[in-house]
Length: 264
Image (cartoon, rainbow, N blue to C red; front, side, top):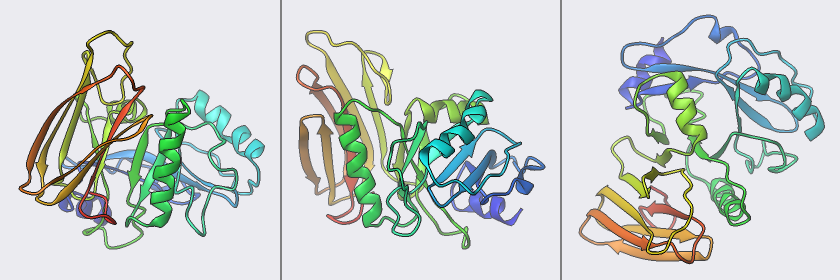
């Protein structure tokens, strides 16, 4: 009850309680009027840490040392509709021993306080996009204490506040991650498809990017499969409203930085 209450006070609308290798926290629904609690479980093994969302009955098998063993364990859970996320794959102590080779629905690119291993994961994620492998990105607080002050925040586009809607939107990539609950708001649209969507190319097509609530001095970087497409410092703060040509690119993605070392 304390975690859920403090989560609401910290500005979150939803969370997943992902205790390590136990499902006792899922014996009931801890949701309140303010905070939706999604069924979650962190599968902690010597090979990798994996979050499993959307199921309330999950078998424990922590003695997993290889990709083959992990896939064998996860296969029946996927059949039941579980959403699988690879956690903090470059953490110095709890990294993924098989890299990104496993099948996954989500990739945690930002874990708690932004660190060098998160930067490495972000770079790896970009390279996977360039190579044509798209795994929607998420952020996780990994908070074990001090639930009133933590980050990051997943900003998910949904039409209803439900576990099914949020997990579906996350797996479609309709999510951007911010350090604060009142951070910049990012909207991307192309031919009626929003962030995370895919559209066929047509002549004269443009990507519309709208960003609001930009702090003064923030650094905007827009990347495509061709590399850094645009970089701009918004000295006054405010908003962006951009139209980008799509004729030479396969994707666009947006980053905002408070400084050269602190992602927003």
